[in-house]
Image (cartoon, rainbow, N blue to C red; front, side, top):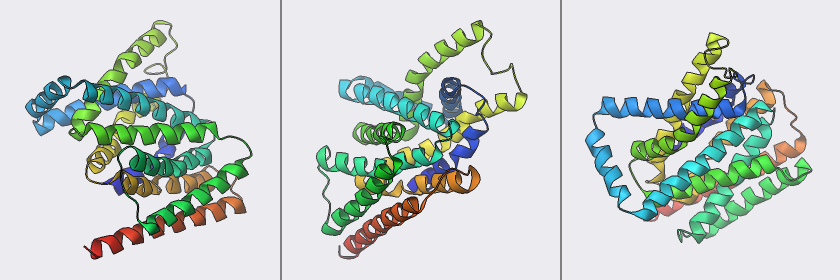
Length: 287
């Protein structure tokens, strides 16, 4: 499930490019609202409303879980906006850099916060990945703030989801509900001034804004289900699927600059990923 989520996220820049004429904040607001509506439809069709309500009641009794949901919604909002902004400002490769950095932060959070242990070869794999990301960062020539914000926000979101440990669809509905209050207010203000795009431009753009909820919900559901079943460090390394596809899109579809330095860094990072995957296989076979 984690692999499927990361693949879908990897090709998502194609979708956001189709909305390049729309303000990123407006795209974000519609993404949140339509995501919530799509999730509610899924909940109704699955007939698990009572289960979700019971879980929400249970969460309401634990201030720590409530805080976790609030923080998860905040980190997810920051991540969504940063990524949409980056893609629509021709920074797909920098956005992919953010998701290359993210696993390192996830591994660090897993070790420090969740006390997860890394084997010798997993540590070596981390060093390879750190080396590749460092080369990319230095080659960029400046602090890649967009990449860093994308990386940190999604790592903290993953940590929040790991610590909350609630049913995926329930958690996503709660997170989307919190974000939707601000989104509805923003869109109301926008349309009251006749400056909203939704329904006032090309019908195709309106359909794309609605569809943003679907293309958002599906990988999020897959990711949320994977979070509770995998270690945060392993989940972080699987995420290299996402930036790899984004990087390829940036190079071959959107024709952004890709140098030999990028290629070398890419190879080093994937070497680290292969080492990490191999070390997991060795550990499982020895059990």
